[in-house]
Length: 75
Image (cartoon, rainbow, N blue to C red; front, side, top):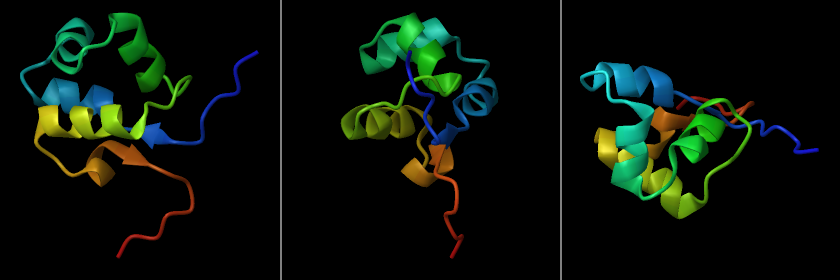
């Protein structure tokens, strides 16, 4: 059984804010399957650091705008 990650993300909101980008389009742009994007969005899978940066780059935002970890203090 896969343990869910504590990392949360704003990928779904970012996709919709970027011309309603589909999961398939995001997957194509970062070089993974749509199933991987679904798993990341649903918190069932934490991406590698490199993949996390690629996702942030696609949306043109800092990594912290895409992924959050519980207990982080905003500065």
